[in-house]
Every structure is written in structure tokens, then in C-alpha cells.
Amino acid sequence: MKKSSLIMMIAAVSVLTVTVFTTSNAEDSKTVAWYAANIKDAKTKVQECHDNASLKDSPECANARHALEISFGVGQK
Image (cartoon, rainbow, N blue to C red; front, side, top):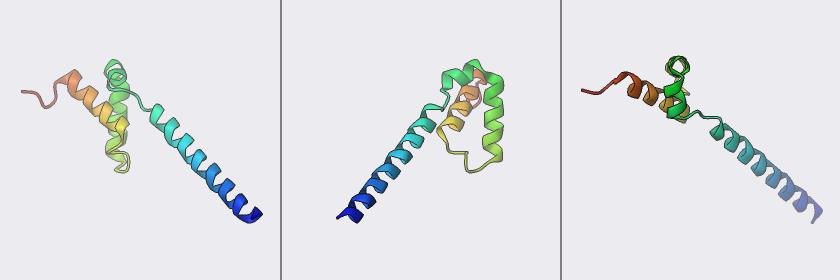
């Protein structure tokens, strides 16, 4: 009985740890509005996303690209 309790405790702590790290990373993402107000940072982030394919589809990369599209009218006719 004690062995199964220990395993359950370790599993619960592991899930909690993953949840905390996932939530804190999501909160660190800057918004489109922030990038629109900080164009230099948006350009830097877009270049970083372009150079690192694993970041390409992240919310922060999407926000930086969208801010540049809004600010410079990229893709608009």
C-alpha cells in the first residue's frame, strides 16, 4: 500500500510541475499589441523564428509576425 501511495504522490507532483511550467511559458508570450508597440523586438523575434524552425509555429512568433503585418501593411492590397 505504501509503495502505491508513493507512486501516486510522485505522479501528482510531476503533473503539477509540468502544469506550472506550461502555464508560466504561456504567460510569457507577448501580445500582438506589445509587438506593435515594440517593432524592433518584433523584427528580432520574427528573425529568431525564421532561423529556428521549432519556434516557427509558436504563439509568440505568430504575434510578432502579425504585429509586423499590421504595422507595415504586409499582405494588404
